Length: 426
Image 1 (spheres, helix red, strand yellow):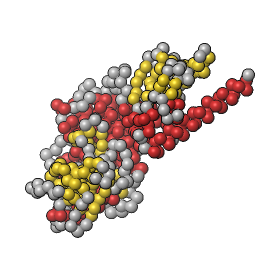
Image 2 (cartoon, helix red, strand yellow):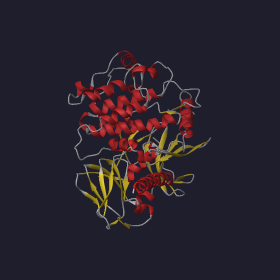
Image 3 (cartoon, rainbow, N blue to C red):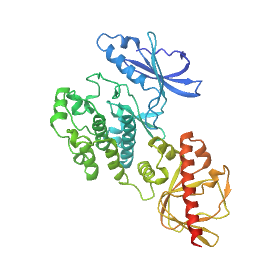
């Protein structure tokens, strides 16, 4: 086993060895130019020159290298750089502190139900993003899904990916047999539905701690995947709700026409059951994301930008009658109403009732400093609110800030139009 640790790899200063495998070593390194820690996968030259598997390894390396800078999603491990040459071959990736999902597929370490749904939901959206960019992962399994120290999720290792827009020659036999779809086994054409099937198997394992198919060898395993139905998840775990059973069955359906047709269909059904076994005051990230997607305020935001908003916002459920903002008080945050209604008053005059998708307190961001509130806002019904500090928004990406600027502008235009209408009536 080669455990020699170099001082550096080109411009990257090596900090430590993270892992050692048959085909590569993975190092923790520091990129002084970008000012960040990175993970570097250094491919062993012996693997690339192997007479039996060298061609496959080179193909996988070239595929992963081609994705550098292409996948910018909060739930995909970013590939920053790649170097392919006669003496040195490596991939520079985002450094993720955490562990894979493998541990949580064991019966004694199963995660809470709502957390499992949230993980699969995030993976579905990340794979939908990849699919829209012409990329099919083809090797979805717990070992390739990271759960970070902060509880977030990231999909890793796109080396086996199929690039649908320009990859005319696909390597066969790529993937992990226990997670392979029927069409992978029969060497049929690969589509995004292959990843849906594999994520369905991951879902099955996270829910039950069991394999959908168990076999003594790969031949028997392949026969079961092609011709037998997996044991129902509720036999392994009777407390699971029937709605989850239906989702797993559909994701793992052998027939493409009866499997989920696309990621949005899959993620929508996950979102619909995201509230299962969750305390009333808890708002899951799955529920938050889908709530934002429905709000007119976020109509121009894409999925990546919505996840960014989710990271900079604080959510809460507030009972009816609560005073949220008081006229003349100082304030350095603004709100977006996710659900419910608020009443807005200025002095003794009512300015109306605002519902989901409306915002208030945004002048503290527009004026770029803390400001006095110009109205009093009280929860007319129980409300779910997003609270965002201007400083947090200013630390977001430029495109995310631009989306907010446009959304605020649209709201101000609507308010002015409404004020003109009311003045015309006087």
